[in-house]
Image (cartoon, helix red, strand yellow):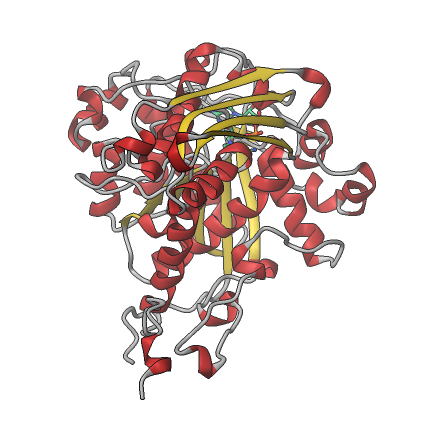
Length: 438
Ligand SMILES: NC(=O)c1ccc[n+]([C@@H]2O[C@H](COP(=O)([O-])OP(=O)(O)OC[C@H]3O[C@@H](n4cnc5c(N)ncnc54)[C@H](O)[C@@H]3O)[C@@H](O)[C@H]2O)c1
């Protein structure tokens, strides 16, 4: 079959620029260094560990994804980023206490060479933080120009061919769409006039899109969701994706809920509670930042269970999510779920889930995959919202008038079918009747 997209090869180096060099970012960066040196395996990464079935089951064609589509090699990645703290990636990774000190020592020189550039930051948006490594400018447009200059000099100084940006910064406070977000013109005027509803994350995203750099949003902030930046992404033909990495409790939810629904089991309540003690937990202890997270976490069950289609099973189920900051646990979060379900004739049952997870260990491979797939999308000439990457997000971005797909298994099918489509391979429908034809 004819290849559907003319994909440019992944020649030369790929730069990954990260606003927010905290636990997730440094676990990701250190992990890539460790894998390059054969000190560990990239577990959890679909691009590195996954395969893709092609054609009929009888053909037995199942190449690794990274051999099927042209992705950047781990050897060819360069890292850079911004943070409000001056710590280099070694110090930041040590402070995050996710990876063992012995491992970090082995890759210390590589990590120490990554020093965060001064950040665009406004404390109104992340109340619990305050740092000194911050840009100054007369207005937000000037700050955006400074980020654009950072991107260009990062590229030139290291002889990098292509760049992608993945937001791993703290969760900003919840804001609604306002007039300044509605069009690119209004947004650009707002940058010059220092409009208070333009968040720092939007300034990075604006700078990236102006430089033709794809932007993926790892946090629940409204960033590239606003019409102004979507317009810019389309105009400059740049891919965007978001938002909020799907790890931990929401990952479990989007694995379990489709299963309950597949068996037509009812749900009367789902209570989710978490304790975590890293800096993310501290930021989320602020009710305004938690609001962004809550909105992002609550949507998934409604979309998966479709109460309007199945009122007998899912009408009025009670759903609550809580996050508690508890310092002793550090990055090792514990998430409890109490799930009240009902079966045949309405008889009730309970499921208790206790996930002792490691937040950044689950998030790091997603950052890698997003960076590599966003770069692939750009080389394939795809632009705007990359819905096929919904697999990675708690609140997948979708085009106007569409609802997001949250079911992890449908998301995976969509992702793999998109890769098949890009390479001109037949899509897999799992019909399979042909195996039984006379
Ligand atoms: N770990 C997970 O499983 C997971 C899942 C989904 C989403 N997230 C999100 O990813 C983000 C990062 O999580 P983390 O655990 O690494 O948090 P973290 O607090 O360790 O790191 C965030 C970093 O961002 C920096 N920062 C804040 N505002 C900034 C700005 N404007 N510019 C540059 N740097 C800025 C902070 O100084 C900090 O170093 C959070 O928003 C979190 O909610 C994490």
